[in-house]
Length: 136
Image (cartoon, rainbow, N blue to C red; front, top):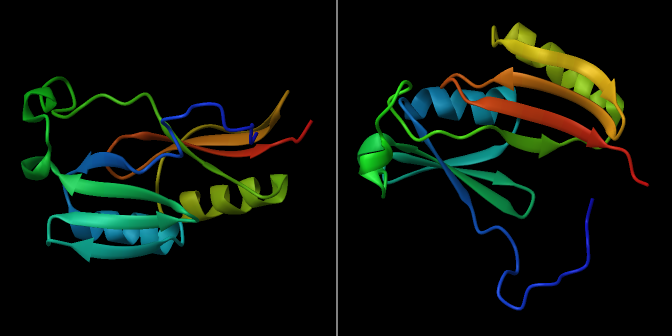
């Protein structure tokens, strides 16, 4: 899925910030369930290290665009976010952990034309995809 660098401006994704309602719950989900390296920052944010990428979970009080913290879910709308797996069996293994943690599986795991995937909800209602992408 890696392509040659084309933009003279964009070197990579600096981070993605998700609004959450509970930092300890985010620490449990990202650290314990998903096994990521996490650290609490400013007591209102959680830095989640995923390889060389960074995901930030923050309370709505820290949201930059507070006007968008409205709507049905009371926060910004995001279709889904995703993580990559190293193998199809990893998709199945994480699916078992998600079930054990009592989180909702929305779809899968299933084989698709470009790999194997599962969609589930994080503890904050966001849709998460875990995908093994078949190299072509």
